[in-house]
Length: 263
Image (cartoon, rainbow, N blue to C red; front, side):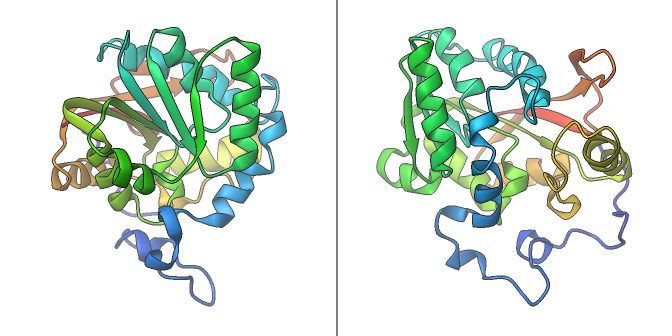
């Protein structure tokens, strides 16, 4: 598990999600944000929804990462016939891959534009996926413990309370089921590569996609998982070469990483 650099480029330790996400002039408390969602973050992605399936557009890195993420899930959980939930599904990249593997997929997101695009694309591909504009905690209240597999890719770093979201993910999966999370580590290397390099120098993703203070160290994720009754089974890095566009799993979780958790 990575223990690199406990100091951020701007100085200071991540004291907690609420502190990390408060902005100039103060932010609304997490309890006032329905569904543990930052509406600014939701709107940011919703505005790009129409371009989600453009493989040469802003979401190209996700298109390159998706086969690796889908394979990571498929090799560690039985998908055929399984009831699978994709939280923060965006335009449906992972949801479609899981459906093609034989899973019965429910996919949720709070961005209406993303869900609309996801539904249209799934229809074109003749895939039966239950897309819903719904918060994870609302679904947990109605259908807690009913999914065999829960996935949450590139979303934890965009919510006000990632520890609370981890607990919500745990409440959605059945005992013995698996939770899969992908996110970005918080250290100097990830700041330089994932933010300065990817957003500002190479312009692989839109500027402002990630905020350094919201990134999550594996040790933090593991602690939140334990508190929620989840066990960390495996941690793997994901490496994307921006020049060759080759993406692969690695043993180095210092930038982008995947976690397999089990309830």
